[in-house]
Image (cartoon, rainbow, N blue to C red; front, side, top):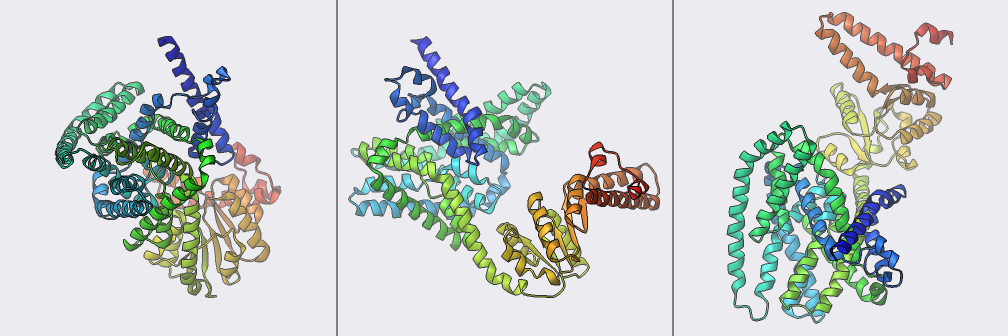
Length: 596
């Protein structure tokens, strides 16, 4: 029996590794997010998919997973590692700065969604305690999926993180609250909550004190061994010990993992820890997504598709509305609020935990819990789609809002420089133009960059320059120059070709990745192309010559001569449509190119 179990475990591992190493790259080739890929694999290989045919075709046992329960610990470990990695990217000051968003919008979002969802279910015939339990369960959103999709650096990611942090902290009180409403319970729930809170606070305080003093020494010793295996073992030891510590006193293990990440983020070893644990996080999270897919039974969905569709749409609409309105009231832009609302609208993996607690407390019937488990699985599956829809809706909303503000800016026909792209390069060019009192207008396709630029007083509009109507509105015929700074070679080439055909005399200055890219842009008609690799090399050369005692005057002259020489050669190479010297690294002289 032990040997058979061991072989079965190996076959499950083959399925998981095969999904990660073979199937997911195939999805990526067709631009399908790995999140959906893993979930679809779970649907296919789970007990409701091909696993249901093992009795008729025994060989399918080697490519299916018939015991999802055996994978649950690995799935939970994936979520723990995800929260740990989030902690590594955060810091205690940054977390403290988010406290109003966490305990303001986060608390209001959870309670508001729970009240509305529970109220609808109560009106539909669900008993009061059961409606409360279902409302709290369905109000939760997926930490694993949402933060995987959006990250934590964008405005949407920051808002999502704040709401999800409150939800993760609230899971334990929710479970105790459901237990307090169970039949034959004599009010022990409040005392249990208080005990958990004070013990949890004590454990967290101990972790923070010990972590600040012990972790630097632990990782210092691991680093001295110069063994990646030892460093990895130390990292996983800290994560697991922290998760166990908070789990032991009744708090969620992911709270411990988050605190461990925050503590390591304060040390000098956070970069190495993040890099060495990343593969494990990705694979374990993939296991979690496969377990989500295994809960989807297509036959049950087909038999009850109408009621399931109403339930899924209802939950999504309520949560998206509550989240969007609260963020809007807190000062968020319309597009950002709409995108965050849709992203947070699906139920969560923790919804399944709360549903199980409500069932154990006899607040809802097992068949009711099973129905909402399917709703949760469907919601998790479509989360990437909702994220895409939300992002597209945000762009449309922001574009409409931006159009009214941009009309006055765009319609001006005064001579000015047009900057396409407002990243670090575009912003620096705008600063130089402002310093010399020269008019300009910048165009950027990232609405967050546009909003920040406007707050700082730059003349900038939101727009996608691949659309002909945007170019028409810029009045390039009146422009002094067109500056292309975006990191999109194909779009840059297309714009150069199009604008040069319209305006043969307009100066077009373009940022190039390297000398080969610059030569290509010269062929297309740019007036000047500036290779980033060339400029960094020239600046480094200038610094070297200055530090070894060469006078500043001759250094500046030689740098200008070298820049002119390279620029001359690139223009000739662009005209001749050949770049052999660039590829070989040998730069011909001006005399040689003149003879050519």
